[in-house]
Length: 347
Image 1 (cartoon, rainbow, N blue to C red):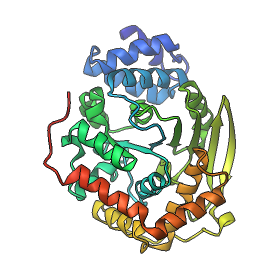
Image 2: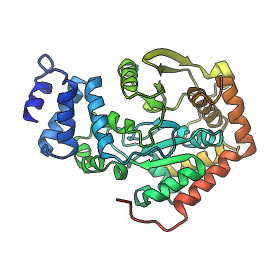
Image 3: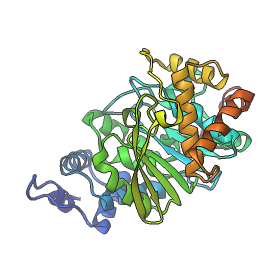
């Protein structure tokens, strides 16, 4: 580990990217806690300064996958949003998941308690506000909810224990690390389709190459709301479409579909997120958030080949919201996840 640290930590001019095999050694040492806390922290900071290469991130993803519980529970769309949460925006992916499931596209969501650097509201917080502590649910319970509804929520630190073991170091550093990217790509359900949120458009090319290396059938890299996978509804969103080794920039403009809407100022709390989620699913949400859910659902249905166009996806999504099927799935999912007595996590 010391030799690897010397390579990535030589400073602005001397540091170099690790080859994939070297990065695997570092990832194994860190995720298996063979490296000391000081070495782990130093590596994370050195990588943050140098900026992680595709090969380095891929190595961390593959080692995370090796230590995670992964099974083809439902092979649909993996929604890879930031684990550090939201501070000033609606969690459209949560509502959207039930629209997609109602349209026949299984969805995998995953997350954990809030992390640096944003320390925002997470899906974990939304579930807890609804009376569901995902960290305490058995794996069987979570899988049962997915099989009944098409929506899988994975508590990442329970299904990939090294993430939990490294939490204290990440909290002490209070900054982004390579794990902020790697943890989003563990792909717990072997999904052929990926939608992945990024904050800066400067990482489009690297993330597109990474998605190709990880062999997703199709992926959409989204410079979305607060670095999430959620498309904006008040302005165009820059995205990168990835398929069969090729990638291209695609601007998705809500105005082109008659959906552009000003977003109201909301002081977001977990309770307010849940309230608006349920309002949208019941057909009585704010127009901006209802439109945002429909646009995100339409684009994701198109990505996963469930519809031939975004326009068709909008028609399908609106019809589903109007007939109440996503709301019924949401209530069924909540019942399976939350109303029975909690059990210890499966080993």
